[in-house]
Amino acid sequence: MPRKIRDYKAQIVELGFVQRRGKGSHQNWKHPKLRLIITIAFKDGEDVPLYLEKLLQKAVQELKEIDRELDQ
Image 1 (tube, rainbow, N blue to C red):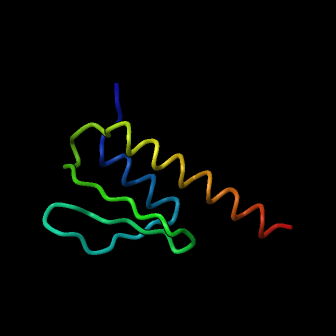
Image 2 (image 1 turned 45 degrees about the horizontal axis):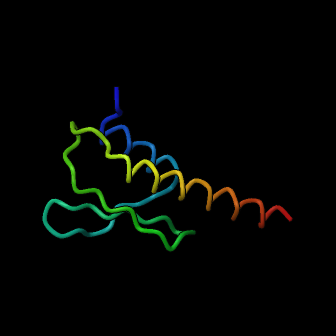
């Protein structure tokens, strides 16, 4: 069963993303360490599309790389 948008939002908040202004029903989420912006245009009860899951995986990978660089 695919996860819901509300669960996706909870995970990106845990990772440190903050919500920025969006137009209409769109929500823009930005992380202070990344240039990447995640735009969510779905209601909380809808299933997360595959492209958003891939975008989140990319963000997690970039955050890990940044943390590794800071540790060195």
